[in-house]
Length: 107
Image (cartoon, rainbow, N blue to C red; front, side):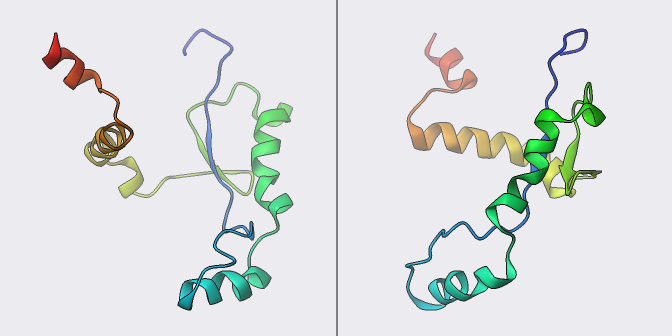
């Protein structure tokens, strides 16, 4: 994207009380029913995403990872290219689409 006006950033919203699994059973259901009092509101979870998409303070910033409106260094596991490749390939397999290597093998 160098030389374009297109930017790409990633962000972590935090743990947000969205209602996910609120009707679940067992310990997981209890956690999501009562844990919501300790989690972020959806508005707070969306804050960094809205800020990244609209603030002049980050205009032109690209390739960064943000949490709470601050650039953060992703964990070592998040930067593991081999793991990312495996995740991508497994996702392709699960949804039934051919990835680049499989498409080449068919050609």
